[in-house]
Image (cartoon, rainbow, N blue to C red; front, top):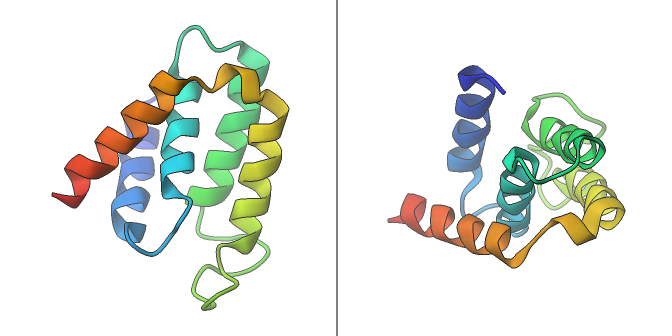
Length: 104
């Protein structure tokens, strides 16, 4: 994965901290997708969900209050269900820590 993709991901995370209640799950998915132990198919599914979250265009624009991130959540939930065994407690802990550091 290139540094541009990583920078784009973390920039989006910083821009939505405090506004997206499932952000810890998005970051856990990111860490799972970056883990060398995660199978390639699972990585592809998870990175697809992350891309949908990060990209500025989707079915419901993110700026619509109350609905904007609903489609992002639906995509994330489907991805997590598909690869649940690969998302470990370590991934979730790393996600919580990363967000804690970003919040200050």
